[in-house]
Length: 357
Image (cartoon, rainbow, N blue to C red; front, side):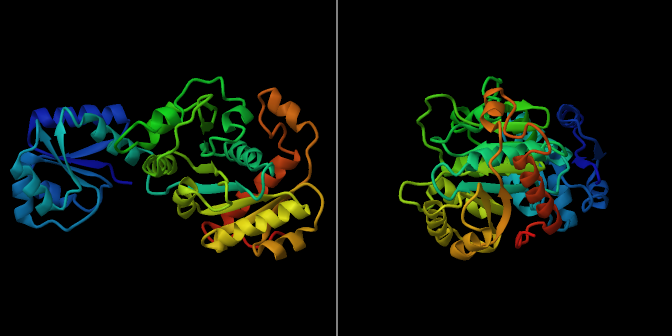
């Protein structure tokens, strides 16, 4: 990947942009005049154009591209906004006030950018099916090979941070993030959350009652994808069985949705009603936990394929109580099932999981 481009002849502005790039830990290249910027225009993932070169650059007619921002020293004037429109900039950033925003842009580029993480949603086909437990198992297994995040979007669930043994770790919860505004950087989110090794979790403070705002959920998921290889979202079930506003916000952003089912008559019936209301069922698969109705019959009733079966795991509650999470050993039932789902995702990408072998 090409380094980001800083195009300015203003020495003070260039020094400040270089300082922000160093804080973000990314390499940059510079152009001190408009012809030099034009020669490098198409390669860099991010171009920061100083207001001092904007009019000259506009006169050269650069091609429209994404990732261009106009940078001024001090509050932008009306002319800066006109130049930004002419050069195709996405925003006008006035330093020093916009320094954090510039750092976020540079940080996102430095995180590798162009390949976002995969998002997997889990939702219980019925109450007590174990969707939170399986979401945490997915997170634990995914963290062995990359950066993983479990997002607990269910305020009435058991608490993903508690299931993972991260409830005592310092870091932001939804209550803090729900009050933030503006764009989150992937790295900032990752570093702000409770984590152990490659696994982080976004949960709730005890006794929290404030509902999630769809805009906050949208921004967090966007930053989570930029900062992690795998994002697992534990989704709530609404009172009437229909996806609520949070679930409705998350589902279209999931590469795969897993409905966790207990294979008994009540569990399968409830899961079938839920599956019938889910959009884009090509991205939906079933995870069957425990013994009972045959998997083929569960799939037939629900109308979506079974992608994993999980036998009841001995010592599961003890493992969670000890703060070890549901996957105490790679060979445990939950670990094998989570590994199989993630492996199938890696092969199929965002395509349908297909039927389980």
